[in-house]
Image (tube, rainbow, N blue to C red):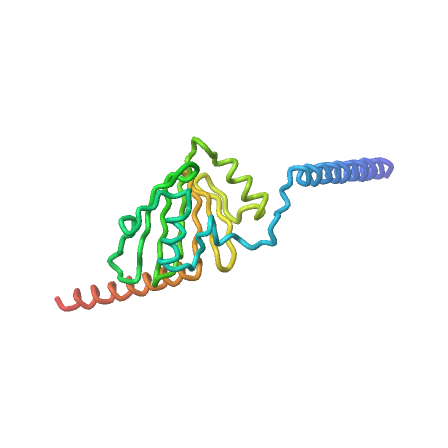
Length: 197
């Protein structure tokens, strides 16, 4: 009986010690997090705008901002492509200083994707990543290829090679649904064609 009691006392003491250690580590971690400033500065809203270029803007407004903005070397209509689908446009331009290249995709005259390939001689992946964590919190997804932040309306990612991409999720989801429907129609037409033999 004394042996069982002794084992219980030792176990209780060990458990108490572990809890105290856990609390100390937790407190140190919280203090380090506070010092590092990893509490997000924003209220969870993700950016939909960069240097005056905003998701949802039309082609005319986009061209006007690109012409005025010193980060881009926009050459006017030469940098605008009209995609096979008459409802889509692609604007691709070289950049200056921090931005090496930039691309913007519009659907039905509304910007829904913007991407900025950054100049790694002037800015590095770690600096961009830590800036995003400080402002918007930890990413919802992280792997060697990309870090992703998203909410109901917007998806922002930092990709390799160093590219920051903004996507209007509602428009993008609509395109994916249309693509799936189109694929299903093609499969049905193929099946009907094969049935004719």
